[in-house]
Amino acid sequence: MTESDFAVLPLSARRQERARELEQLLESTASLARRLLADEDLPGDPDLRDPAQLARRLDLTLRNDGQPIDAVLARLHEVLRATPSSSSWRFVNQLFGGREPVATAAEMLAVVPNVSMYTLKAAGAQILVERELLRHMATKAGFAGSDDSAGSAGSEGCFTPGGSSANLVALLLARNAAAPESRDQGMPGTKLVLYTSAEGHYSISKNAGIVGIGRLGVRKVPTDSAGRMDVGALARLLDEDRAQGFHPMQINATAGTTVRGAFDPIRAIAALARQHGVWLHVDGALGGSLVLCPARRDLVDGVELADSFSWDPHKMMGVPLQCSVLLVARRGALTGSLDETAEYLFQADDDDLNPGHRSIQCGRRNDALKLWAAWLRLGDRGWDERIQRQLGLARLAASKIAADPAFELLEPPPSINVCFEVRGHASAAICDWLDREGRLKIGYGTVRGRQAIRLVCVNPDLDETDLDAILAEIKTAARAGGEVSS
Image 1 (cartoon, rainbow, N blue to C red):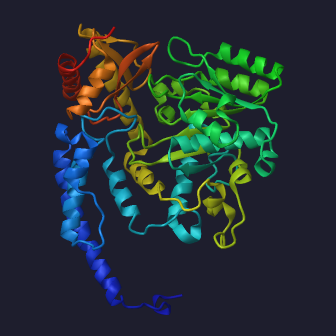
Image 2 (image 1 turned 135 degrees about the vertical axis):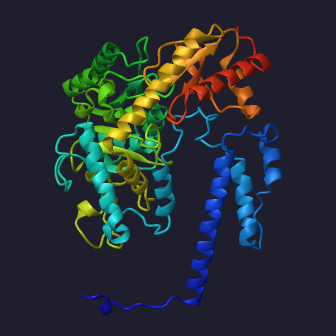
Image 3 (image 1 turned 90 degrees about the vertical axis):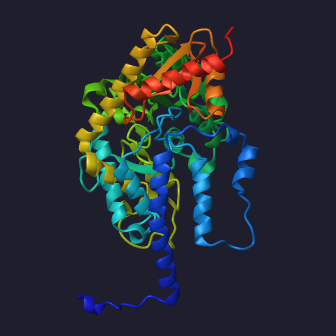
């Protein structure tokens, strides 16, 4: 078939107009992005911290009549200027921060074709991009059979809208493995329970309520002094529950807890999971990327023994939100729990090329292209270097805090989270003052019963000067607004 065999239709007048409008907007958007980048390190306006005042200033009201493009762009600029930038040195609040430029560009380009990732027919080459990513990531996790380029044996995976959703799908798989009838018949009379660290993510309890286990079916396993799951306590809980007629169905091991960045001992937990026939899920939303760092892969030792593994490239890998993956060790588990017949959707190609069979979603945005572009740019070695720098920044921050008599470092950082106090001042009051004044986005959490400031060193573009500025801002807040702790 030659090019002349295809009918080439001229653009209609309306399509031409819409194309010109998009071209104009793309040029204007580039200019707007440059202005935002130039300003992203500026302090926030304290007057705009109040949501009522912010809404009045921005005038977000939607009306009957539309506005010219220039007016829309001006309003966009106003709203974006009032939005914190997670790539600023002033943003050390969440477990994401910084950016990989090529991933940002790929994210912007992905919306031009604007495909949904359920079938090869609808998304074309993007399905192959996603498949290659899942194959390569599974190989890095050490899942058996994941080196098959066609993805026809061994492990499988899916992209999800965030780590909480990845954990939800993993819990659903574990439930169906423990109670195969539950997908069709529901769960009357079952006594399924699951186990997670007392410092694990809140999504575990939330998801238990969603899939019918119930939040009371979640056992919060005590942690050791370093914030890791106590394997001895886990073993006792498993034995006690079985003796009382409960059915253990999943153990959730955390690779990088939210506050302390601690890593549960996966290999020891895996031995208990196999002994009791329980599904082992590793929540690696934060720390899963350590599989790409040979020097510190010991932190996720044993992940290859898991039944499922969640991993958020939008955290330590700096890929734009959202980008989350669930990897499953045994092929067929996702399809067995999520597939439904839909003739109007799945009309062509093998099931392997139609990831809608393995997804909790129908319509799904393209989160693969940006990660693939970043991986092309950096390669495995580049990710390793990025992660090494993040870990090094955390060590540097910890050393500065430990050397300063104004601070108290509560523990050496297990990974990229640095937890400390300002002596004589309440951590919550300091963080709240910094937020109100627009000086710094930083949060707090509990470490061994003490309320600690949590500095997240996830942005590898920070340097020693930035760390010094962050600590100086915290001292200013302590003097100005930090209440004396009891």
